Length: 400
Image (cartoon, rainbow, N blue to C red):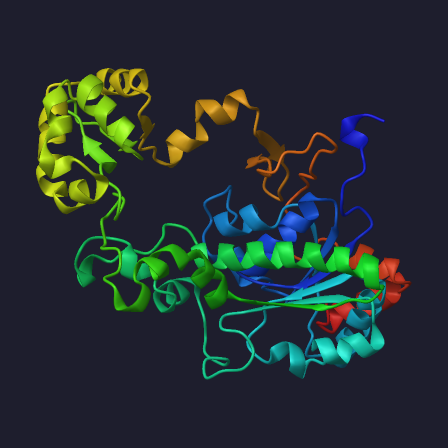
């Protein structure tokens, strides 16, 4: 059997997802990458509200194209009684239900784990929310930036003053929650192989992001000063960050140990004596005197061009990087050389899409189309045994 035809890890697994925005869709897209059939249940007429975020990808929304390839779209108005019957039929055949509806909405629809487990004991239920079940924040609305704020992320990003705090440039709290939902579901599938019964996976955006904040939290343990905001530089290692070069470009470089500091002074700055300067003789001293050291580095780079600086850094085995913009990433030579881009279909034409980062030699990930709203409704309902006349009635009455 050729590798392209090899069985994928989640072939035969069916996922029903009541999802919107980023966290749940990113989770289920990764399940689809591994072969799962993902049926995305959307509101008739409007669908996942992330469809309307922008029109940057041939008229489609950038977030939506990223997180929804390889899925089937079923429109279903869950406020109408018949829709609940249809959903029950789908869940009877499904392995996983994922939902990130508003707090309490799933339970009001009869979709709590307790209610579903009685009827579908093998079903795995993944609930994603902002703050989790219980506690004073349970009903609080949660968007990505708000969780970045509550989780302390904004306290360590941006410039040194409060008016210079900076959010992450992508939806980091949503992504964290989506990743933990994805791995939690995979764990639940493995557990079901051992026990024969499904389980509940509960994911909180706040807890997902706070897990990622453990380094700065431990750095500030028992009231110690937290890592200062340092812009794009590292807060507690120096030199580690962006530095301007004489030709107007910028280089990102990083030193991790004293051996690299010696080489940096000798081969990059061409100032061996600086390595013995007591102000910079250990990382904590360099951090304390970063302004003085930065001035010396900037002065040394002021007469050089980008290629010369990179050549020196490479010769000294000092880690470095370009500061790419998005177009630079689209054209990144490493991604091209490793053939990491594939073309996927959308309703408005094909677009490039990055292969999943976890590369396996046993199978190729699914890289299917991004669905149009309700594109698969008729096929899914016909698969449940509904005649075409009944499906047309459901459409006419606004159920689908």
